[in-house]
Image (spheres, rainbow, N blue to C red):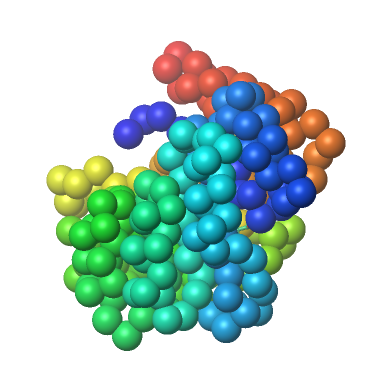
Amino acid sequence: MNKILISPSILSANFSILGKEIKNVLQAGADMIHFDVMDNHYVPNLTFGPIVLESIRKYPISAPIDVHIMAKPVDNLIPLFAQAGANFITVHPESTYHLDRTLGIIKENGCKVGLAINPSVSINVIDHVIDKLDLILLMSVNPGFSKQIFIENTFKKIFELKKKINLTKKKIYISVDGGVKFCHIKPLIKSGVNILVIGSYIFDNINSKFIVKKIKHEINNFKNISVV
Ligand code: DX5
Ligand code: ZN
């Protein structure tokens, strides 16, 4: 679990050339793709659904895709995203009445199970479902929009989460999502994050490949320094 993965959020990509945008970041060294589903109900924004994911798979894109569902109700969407090609499906606890059942549906559909934790939500929400989790997505902004400011209290939550995960024998990815810029990369790796979800910082730049390479370089630099 030492590898730090870069997961560009396509919410900030140019949708008219989405396949190309995804290919570019993967060629530059991104490890997976973050797919933000919004419904204008659970969050005040509207994005894309399973048919867009299916098109991405057909383009073809074979990299792992984490589908972050910000939609309510959520259970009926899970099989659709699994069939469309999701590898991870991440849900919010507030989007379902029966979280344990919802996480079970993700697993039954052959996907890795993710739970997203909003800035105001305690990490204790994982306590009775931790055995089911493969990924915990800590929201470092309130869900709904890209280009928001990173909430610094996230670092405290990563620290507490790390302690909880260490008590289990399970390997669970810690992913951080929202407002991540270059200055956050080192502190996030240092605090124990495994997956960096980054949207506007990558795709708002005219040269997204250059930015991904720059992030990759920073990750490798960090590894080299910490070995010495
Ligand atoms: C916010 C989304 C994030 C967002 C990240 O609700 O879940 O994935 O797109 O974009 P930036 O990096 O611009 O905050
Ligand atoms: Zn997201």
